[in-house]
Length: 282
Image (cartoon, rainbow, N blue to C red; front, top):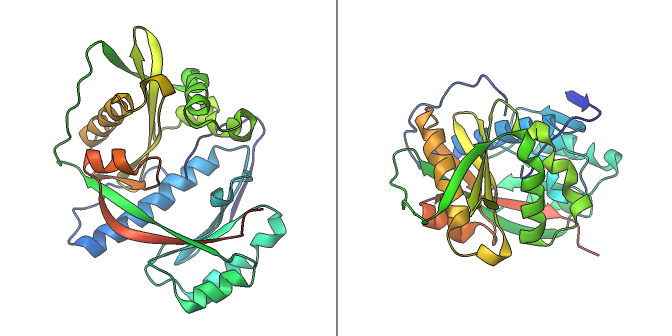
């Protein structure tokens, strides 16, 4: 188990161990789904390692990851294998109440009566699903062009710009996500950050985190006044092109209502399903 207690160290959003070798070309959809889940773990490990405080305890089939953030989906036990060992899941979930944080249990596929019963024992009675989608390197991108728009690759000095745009784009409370936009996150060796400017003013962002031979795009945000005009897509396409040029074999994204339309436009295709058990809100 690795526990990190770092004061003043920074991070970022969206749930990599460095030095991973690039993945060989997958033999089929199942292999691609397995690789994407492993890469998701590597990316998320890198992300939470940059936080002031985190716990990272990988098992054989699952991982306990604690970010100490108030968002439940950033704390919990996550099944990485297709059929994770139920005993291992039970041992890891038994540790979660001790952190006194909102948390989730997530498994691949649609879940089983056994995982549902395990989750229910901890009050995690709400069940939801979302897709894990992948874009293979070499897939043609739409190639959007916006006259007058400039995409700049940036570093941690632009962390405040990312936070500003995220808050305006989503309406989220600034203080509740501040830890996810510290400069150190953007300076991680596995990170690539981009800002789109219109008339010299930042209007959209994208952050890529690399791990396990794949890249995961985060912070695909645009200011409300330019939403739907392609600026977030422009940032995402630059991120993907640059990542694939370095030898990354694919990109992965956990789809949500806020990013699914863009992911599909870019060519991401579903390779797996995640089922998440969480406590009822309120």
